[in-house]
Length: 112
Image 1: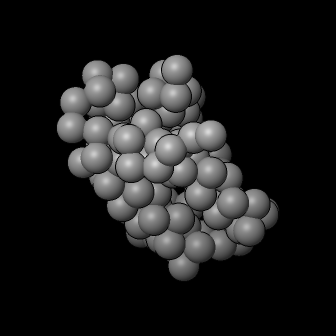
Image 2 (image 1 turned 120 degrees about the vertical axis):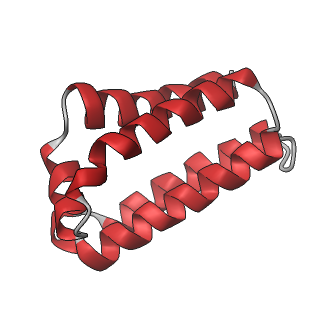
């Protein structure tokens, strides 16, 4: 169930918010970071992560990749696109909870 929830978030953020109906805030952040061209590539990468997560293959590696990607995207957004992030502490809190679930799904952390 956790893998499905994680995959759904990756699919929504990547496929919907970056490929099918690009979110204006996402476009503004990547534009500010100087990588507006990368929005579709990021969407494809996030969609691929959704498939990887739901497959259950190499779960610890998947959790590590998810962590690295979110840290890089959050850091880049805060560094270059901060004006389009209305609630930075909330974003960090939500992503910390999301990544905690990724590591629970990987079997590294245990849900009680």
